[in-house]
Length: 328
Image 1 (cartoon, one colour):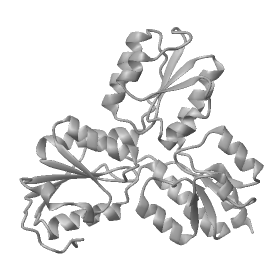
Image 2: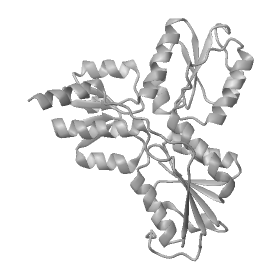
Image 3: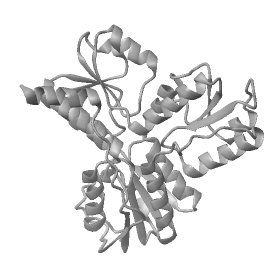
């Protein structure tokens, strides 16, 4: 494995980076939940699923005392448990209660919004077309809110063949980390087939996903290759790769700077770099350093599209614990 300081025969003239990149407010909140709970109650604290989809972050939290599990039967009764940012269905909540687990819910508020929409639509008797990837943990959690009223629609082909009991009573919701363009195509098909299709009052795809995809669209006209820093199981990171490819620009997903292969960069004069909403800035700067030290980049240009200043407060149950500790 090459180090960032080993010079390469391949030289890149310019590195173009996205100013809008990396951690979103939901990710910052989720990490903060784990760290604060560990500071208050000590080790161990259990987390169902990866708190966010990033190995570097998960490994750091594991070193601090977090134990990550996929099933609740791995958690000793009465232990502290955190639900990840991706959300869970009511069956998981009920199982946690049955095991007398002390739960802190770190579900992203934007995911919670979709859950509440699903519950409301199901109560009104709607069939819900949930646009998303059926094997993604967020989609699985949302589906759990109203499984008898919801069907996952993963692409345009599935939208074309969707059958529902009442074509006049159907609405759609979406996974929060999808491609804006792909989702738009699926919704267009559903609207054509079901003219009375209901829509969320506000777009379900989260602000951070939209902003990062728009930043990629702004970058691609001036670059030869886009590197996206993110985990293989990170939906929003994979969508950034797809956005670039759809615009005719080669793109690669990497987890660390060491993943970069020289053959990818043959003929590349201007390299683009962005990161998904779960990728920490320290890993981003690792790639920037490699671009300078290994590939001779002397010019770094930052592309600015919009500013982000969103902030999500801590879960109420954690705030209560913090206040109780402060009162002692």
